[in-house]
Amino acid sequence: MTAPHRRPLIAGNWKMNGTLKEAADLVNALVKDLGSPSHEVIVAPPFTALTVVGELLKKSPIKLSAQDMHWENSGAFTGEVSGAMLKDAGCHAVILGHSERRRMFGDTDGVVQKKLKAALAQKLVPIVCIGETLEERESQRTFKVLETQVKGALTGFAPSDLSTVVLAYEPVWAIGTGKTATPDQAQEAHLFVRKQVAGLYGDALAQGMRILYGGSVTPENVDTLMAQPDVDGALVGGASLKPIGFLRIVNFKSPAAH
Ligand code: 13P
Image (cartoon, rainbow, N blue to C red; front, side, top):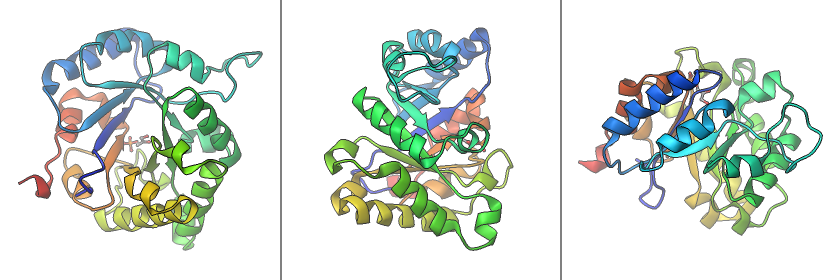
């Protein structure tokens, strides 16, 4: 179980899914049955649904996140959305450097770093994603990849700048595949990532930073993942589109709570 000073966070990444009606139906179902969770809960709908979902979340503890942003505030960047616009639309957080963006849309570590800086300037909570591919894992390069991604995204800041940052370890081979990392694999990677952050910015920042696990998280596997000491929450894709399953994930059962 996560350390007591790191509040568990469950975030749903809806990816490119949902008409306005589907988004409203999903969020209404979550709000209706959520109650008062002791954990922090975030949903990240597609851009088009942000304001609709934000409106419906107004009296709820669930917070709103976007799935990406541009690093400039405004200008000639056709098709892009800025952090200032996300803030204006009611966002609390933004996902950055998701592996789907890295793989399909050219988000390099340098791009992620620029976006991180812009998100922090807008006082958005950045959820920075990292994670190795299957090929990298099988060729024993997992730690090297994680080190490069953590350093690439997080260098060039003061420790105090980064106090709100959340990291999400999402092994690419576990995303949308039904092949979840084992609790031991997740713990090993999270501990390694925390040590990298400590090496860059000291133990205090690293101990306070929440590291989420993402990749085929389900109601069936969330409890054992969350039982790991360095797993501070989950970034949920497919299972976040079904209200009952997502609420079960939000209300994961931790051994320490008994
Ligand atoms: P799945 O939960 O569908 O594997 O997706 C994980 C993810 O990419 C969350 O950002």
